[in-house]
Image (tube, rainbow, N blue to C red; front, side):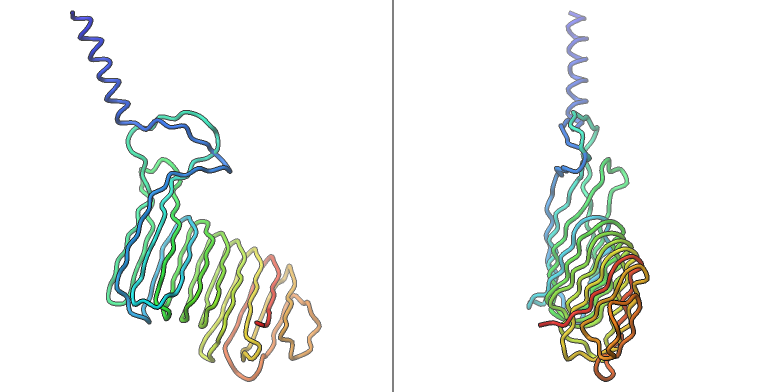
Amino acid sequence: MRSIRVVFLILLMIFLFLSSCIITVVEYGDNESPLRESFQKRVPFMPGGTVSLLHTDGDVVIQGWEKEEVEVYAEKKILFPYEERIRVWRGRLQYPQIDMDVYENILNIKTEIPDEAKFRGAVDYVIRVPQSVEINLDITGGSQVTITDFYGNISVDLKAGNLDVENFSGSINAFLETGSIDAQVLDLRPEDEIAISTQKGEITLSLPSEVAAHLKGSAPNGKIDCEFNNNNTKIPVPELSVQIGKGGADISLVTSQGNIQIKKLE
């Protein structure tokens, strides 16, 4: 009878241990198959405010809309490397956390990776904002960033990835360590400024044909092509300084390793 009790206790202990663990078959590497969890929240937000995102890894889409509110939709992911095998983890897998804080007309969004997280986490965002707004992005990991359909100011600091700006009017200040920038600016006021730089990547800037601006470009290990060549400068060149029209905004484009293209919008 005593031996039966011992066996029962052992089986009970094994059951309790397994119930507190996660047993899964995962694939590690390029063919990532992440676990996912969704997040969605809306907050009232007047045009002219500031939306800031402090982020780690994951793609970001910011899109203007006609509503006086900000909607944040996010897909939180736990990423696994490639190597098919059975794994046992004690406790729950920790998803990245999203913190949102609104003060007056300033919205701060922050991605937080739990300290006890056993795997790399990432969050893909789709953020809808009023059509007049200031955007500040600080992304310390890898991300494909798309910003579209509003006017105002954009500030982006991105460690690795690409930045696409479409159907936008206003100022852009963007720095990428590694990655390319493709920006389409529909309207520039004299007080606006565009400063775009990347250590390794391509820069493409599309401007309206009637734009007025002072343009400076530097691509010491590449070349610059410019469709606004009022000075009849022989191009392509590694360095360029040209006045487009009279007066206007200041534009600075710099890539340490890559090429620069300045195009006219059709």
